[in-house]
Amino acid sequence: MSSRVAGVAVFVLLFMIAAMGHEFVATDFTCTGVSEGGLCWLKDFRLRSSATWRFLNVPQGVILTLRLEGVAEDPCQDCVGRDVFVRLFYGPGKGGEWGRIDLLLRNRAPGCNPGWYKVYGEASFTWLPEIATSELVIIAQRVILCDPHVGFTLRSLILEAPKVEIPAVPPP
Image (tube, rainbow, N blue to C red; front, top):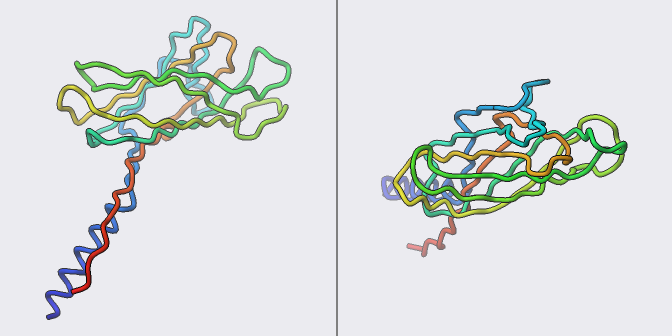
C-alpha cells in the first residue's frame, strides 16, 4: 500500500513540475557592438552591430515566449525615454531557415529623465526548425538610425516554454 502511495506521489510531483513551464537562459552571448558599462551597446550608425544569444536544448514544435529587456540611451533627443525598435532573427546554429520578429522595446518608466533607462518587449513564436537541432540562436539589431541606442547582456533575453495543462487525476 505504501509503495502505491509513493508511486502516486512521484507521479503527481512530475506533473506539477511540468505544469510550471520552463525558462531557458542563453548559454552563450556575443556582441559586435560596443562593450561599455557591462553592456553590449547597439549604437553603430550603419546599424550593423548585433547581440547574439545561443540557447541549447530548446524543445521543438512549441510556442515560446521571448522576453527581452535592455537599457537605452537617447542621443538624438533632448528628452530621453523613447521606445526602441529592434529586429530579431532566430534560427538553428547552422543551416536551415531563419525567422524574423520585429519588436518594440517600450520604456518601462516613461518620462523625461536624462541617462540610461530600461526598455522591455515580449513576443511569442513557434520554434519549429526544418532540421533537427538542439541549438537556437537569436540575433538582435537596431533598425532605425535615430532610435535610442540599446544595451544588452547575457541575461537580457529569456525564453519561456508554456505550462503544460495537466488533466485531473481521477480518485482511486
